[in-house]
Image (cartoon, rainbow, N blue to C red):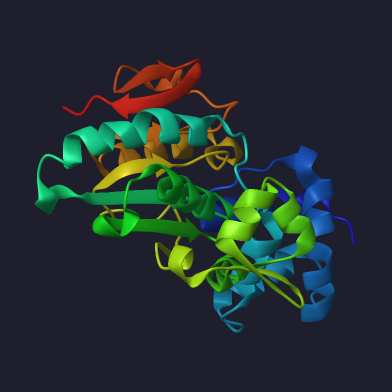
Length: 277
């Protein structure tokens, strides 16, 4: 079913309101490809009717189904490996030097915002495990959040297909941190215990979160308009602990957001440390 001209603005405005994702007339094909099955299932006459039905709340899961369909879930283990290299070679040694001075401060909090099906937070957990001496002498908590219920459910299970583990994991990591099952692979309980998952919309208040020693928010804001994107990163910055590290996508930059964000480099790997007032 095609999106007609008269309904495109209504549909894109609704999608922007519930997810932050900004679409325009040029993305009509994406709306059609992602939502046509939901329209058929819900027996709606057009896309506007679908959005109105989601707004009225007759089906409490319909809004989440639309978000799941529209948002991108493409991910893999150790995606764009550079941030994990910086974490292993720069950030973790910094934490060891600073936090080991006081046995009561051996606390690490990391947030993977927009974690999809969990590959990023599990990659962070594996990096910490391999780089920290005696990992269970540290108080570690990695939070993975995503707007998609379906993604969070899969991430929480810690189960991945053969295809998924082959994307980014070498044989040593697979043998060390995963158990093979009939349907694929499962994250071992010891590693799973370091990660907590919950559904969360980044458009909502972040005041209950943090402070975090590091935040990974990569390739999420590229789908937002300028105002939503700027607001998100400003709000993320105040959820960081003093001296915290902010990692964005390899094709992203915060240069246009002003001097509040200081770009730093480790071996040409870009990360940010906000200048809090």
